[in-house]
Length: 92
Image 1 (cartoon, rainbow, N blue to C red):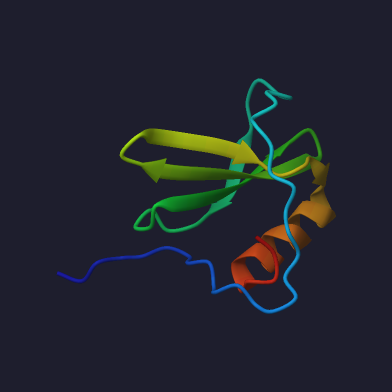
Image 2: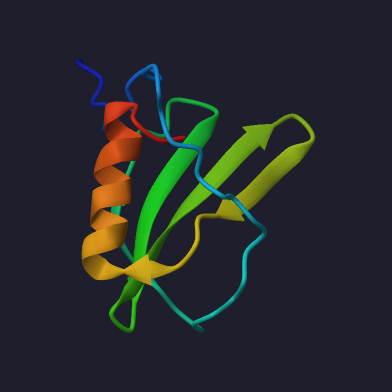
């Protein structure tokens, strides 16, 4: 049986932008996950939206447990652009 893999983040490109990751803010009680990367790697990213804004959630899994961080909250178009740049290796 063939394994299915989701989106994978491409290798970092020269001149990439650093995302300002911080701890979870809990800005909204619930968010909708609009996109996510493959669960086969130790770091998983999710594109989250709520109230016309969005952010990227990063979960880094290790034997010591999960560490969750978030990008800044941005307007919908801006967070979609950041998501695309993350996937293409232009931001991390």
